[in-house]
Structure formats: structure tokens, C-alpha cells
Image 1 (cartoon, rainbow, N blue to C red):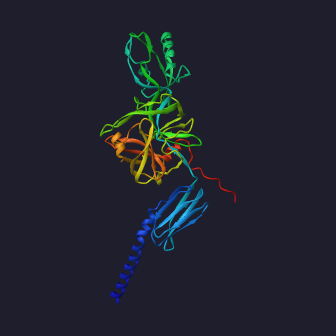
Image 2: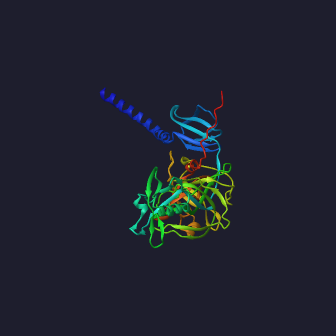
Image 3: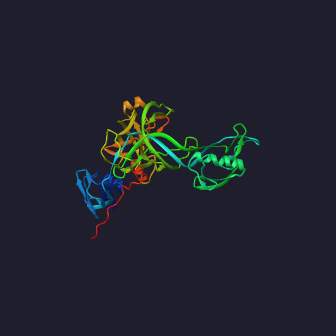
Length: 429
């Protein structure tokens, strides 16, 4: 009797185990689905599910069409709003997915080579030098505690914006023997100091013992612009001073068209570079009001075209980007924008802004032959996947010029002051 009872117990356990195994894979599939999904109007998203699964919408504030196949459930976003998708297994609710639908949003991709001119807030200290004074070789600026990377914003209570404004104060202070009252910006600090200029015996002029600069220039690539507001984003990374290696604090600036004259091909350990010149007419096509880790941003004076993809296209949020083939828009000859093949090697569905969202690899034979891969000046080149703008090229891997990082377009749009998450007003009941 005991043996027969034990045999039944073991049999029951085996039966339950077999049933549980039948549900294990579908359960794993459900648990792997995201808890939250964001779509734009008109977008479609498809998930693989088990044959025995069913899906439905509860708390529907907008219209999402669900089409369920044998092993899939497809979501078709119809109108902006919030929904909750409930997935069931054998009639039992297993997974809830919040579905947010954003209003349709499109931008024009760039790819154009641009010249960049930045004006700093105040004048930037980029180095110290010794003055051959009658008291010996000294650097008055260094003695006053001014460091490389500091920004001189005021002298004797007057705002300083350009290098040319500094000279008269220095000579006047030298003649009167009265030290200058200097205000510098260091990181987030405001520092006051006194600086006594010294006369250089060789040149017979008074000097600060500081190297200073009030502007910076370079080239890069346009990423996108929004056709209604004309807000744009470019470069995909911050512009840092070449001497201090610190981000340039922008007072203002502008962008112009540029022409690529030649390419220095990249190789292992040696990143290549686009050599370019500003357009002959120096026509200003836009301003610069922000220099951030995600690029430079401002407003265009007028719409511009790349000659390849000149119609507004949808974007992909970071969680919608996938590994696989993609393309970039960039210039390698004169001012002609071309499409080139790349591969998205990896992508991170970021919940918060970060600059390194993708690893990309150049696969296009023509681009590899011309540049060796990613070169300086290519930063900001828009990345296109499935006819959507998904991001921009940012940095090259020094030891592998065919590969580099990309930034998700979602964060560049936010930095540009474009609210893609704008939610519709709830209608009164």
C-alpha cells in the first residue's frame, strides 16, 4: 500500500513538472518583453509570443490596433495617448505592458559639411608665459592664481567679451602701477583676484603672462533640423578647446557651409581627418547657442538640402534601434552628400541621456577606400535605419578606424529644445 501511494505521489509530481515545462518557454518570452513601449503615430511594432497566448488592451485612452498571428502580436499606433497591453497565457494574465503613443514627429536629416565658429564667454586662458621684467622672469597671471582653463569675464568691473578689450586695461594698469581687479570663471566658481602687469624689457610693453583666446573654429557635419522651428543639431559631441581640453563655454557663434578639399586616411593608432575650407561666400546659415556633450545646437536662417534625402523622416527612440545594417549621410568630396553602408554592432536602449548609445562599423567599400573608416570631421553624420533617423556618428576607435560610437537622436533632439514627448491634452468627459 505504501509503495503504491508513493508511486502515485511521484507520478503526480512528474505530471505537474511536465505541464510546467510546457509553460516555461512562453513564460520566459513574456518576462523578456519590456514593461513600457513608446511609439509614434503610424508606427508598427511586432513581438513574438507563444501560440497559446492572447493579448488585449485595457485602460485604452487612444486607438491602438492589435493584430495577433500564430506566434506574434503586432501593435499599430493610431492616435496619441496611453494604453496598457495585457498578455495572457492559458487565460491567466502574465504580463502587462504600458504602451505610450506620441504624436507624429519628423525631421530633415543633414549630412552637409559645415564650418563652425564659436565665441567664448569672456576670454579663455589657454596657457602661461614668462615676462622678461626688471624683477626677473615672471608670469603675473600665474602669480595671481589664474589657471589654464579659467575664463576672464571682468576687468575693473567691466565685462570682457573679446581679446581686443584686454590690451588697453593692461597698458593703463602698467603705467599707473595699480593692479587690475580680475574676475574669472572656473568651473562653477566665480573667483576674484588682483593682477599687476609687468613690463617686458625686450618689447617695452606691459604683459599679463597669459595666453588667451576668445574664439574657436573647425568643421563638422550637420545631423538634422526641424523644418518648422528650424532648430538644428550637429557634431554629436562637445567642442573642447585644443589647448585646455575643456568644453568651450559658448557666448554665441555661427555655422557656414564648408567644402571638403581632401581626406587624410585613418589607420590603426592614427585617426584620419577631413580637410575642408569654409565656403567662399562665408554666408552664415545658422547661429550657435549651445555646446553640449551631445553636439552644437541653434537655429538655421533658412532650410537647407542635402540632395539625397530631402523629405522629413520619422525618428527612432533609443529602444527602437536594432543591431544590423544602417547607413550614414556624409561628405567626402567637395560638398556632395552621399549615403554609405554601416553596421550597428550594438545598441543600448537608454532610459537617460548618454553620449555612447551605439557601436557602429563602416562596411561600405567606397568609404573604406576613401577614408579608412570614421575620420575627424565626420562627427555628426546622421545614421539612418529602416527609413528612420536614429542617431549620429560621434567618435572613432583609435585602434580601429573602421569602428566608433554613435549617439541616439532622442538625446540630440532634447538638447536642441525639441519636445518629442509632447502629450496631447486630455479631452473633457
